[in-house]
Amino acid sequence: MSIEDKLKELGIELQTPPSPVANYIPVQQTGNLIYLSGQGPRDEEGNFITGKVGTDISAEQAYDLSRNTAINLISAMKSYLGSLERVVKIVKVFGMVNATSDFTDHPKVINGCSDFFVEVFEDKGRHARSAVGMGSLPNNMAVEIEIIVEVS
Image (cartoon, rainbow, N blue to C red; front, side, top):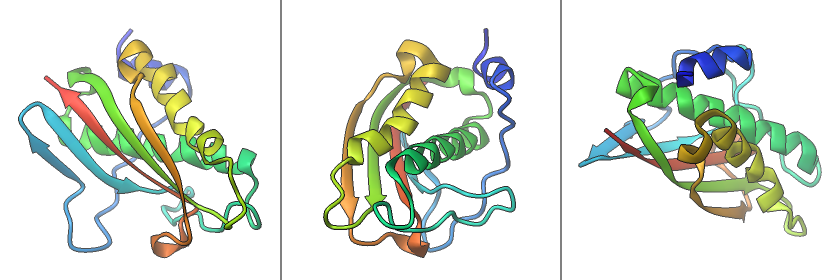
């Protein structure tokens, strides 16, 4: 089954990625690696979902927002690559959580992204990862995730 068929089976329709909000490009390729700039969770209107994990947002809600962000990253991949079948593997995930100073479940939050990548890409979705807490994130996003992907 193709990656896009798998997404359809899961009820996921990829949206056109929004334009960058600052002076950067969404994807940079060098050799067979693409580096995707940080993405955050967005609502149906394309607005960032905001708040601080640990006060405004629970770890469980943030897990879902991390999954939402993974979908946005896949949209950016498809926009750049044309076909998700070019993905050889997800190499690295760097997940940042906009969290209170006493929040310590960052890995559980970023599992929303990691679990989704493995669900969609199977073994090609397994990756190295960092999950860290931040005092703030741009636009008060609840999470921001950037990834490195090997492509053909």
